[in-house]
Image (tube, rainbow, N blue to C red):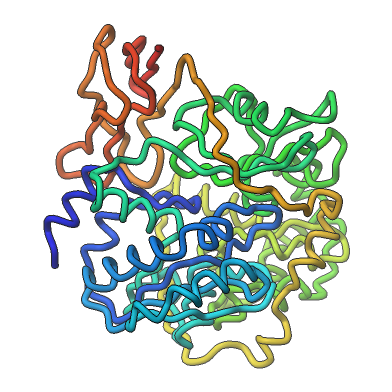
Length: 441
């Protein structure tokens, strides 16, 4: 293990850029036989990773070589969808110089980017229930995360910028690179701003993203900002309250099991059957002694069950509620069975992305969002101390301090899981609180 490389990654504050935000220096303190770059970018409308793969193919493969060496792997694989033609071609041209690396192309199904799904697609191995890819000898990293690793090793560059796809009801959909801590409103302006007067913004993809305020800020895990007009069915789904979800489930679930037929974790052999969980709303019982509320922990929250349901019900939201309640009461997941094989006919039950986009009502927004080196001159940034998995970073600056872009402003608490934080603009520290650091030019 190269402790110097781990140290550079830790110093740079790198976390998973695809949305999860797990500290990369911890992930790479491991032994594995395979490293997978997750280039599936399975959320509809997002374009960051496919464009990075096309434009920075050689750099990505160089980063993957570093990661393969770091964990002692025999091979590295870039897994992406076959219809990302520019990325496939660029990576194919660069591959001969990297003998340990290869490409794995996948069909256009959702959620191809779920890390357990991608491990199975590439290696044929099934991650155990409640487990992680490392349990089967695999490390998975996002495209942008890997490029951040290379920047840290090559130039000691910390994570201070983020690539974000700005799309939906905006004048000019595009993918931009912005300093961490700029507002959603400032980022939307780079795409010409919304085309509608009344709207909401989804941070992330339409399936697993969350509705956010335009005053919220871009963090290390922001991947996309989607402007959705008020009244759109996607917002009705995301904003439906838990009590309403329970009433709908109790009144309308007919136990057809279509949700369970397409559940990606269920298709890997995990004991997750969303239709059984829905019985709680109607009967107050699961009606199956082998199934308990703990099985909700095996739900990955992909929301696919809702779009397989002919009634538009939301088993994923029920699972989220149960996970939250169990967590608050100290109940942890005890389900760790190792499936011996995936479900029969799994390959025929994978959900086509184009069908999903149509069901989401987003066909009009499924357009290119070309990457542009747009400059944003932020007069101020707000940097949350928590931008990923683990404990919030501890400030090492105080109000009134002068900081330069890239300088360290908060560190990982001793003995904790977390990530360092750096100034994304040069300026003066205007405020330091328990939650954030504000810097003004």
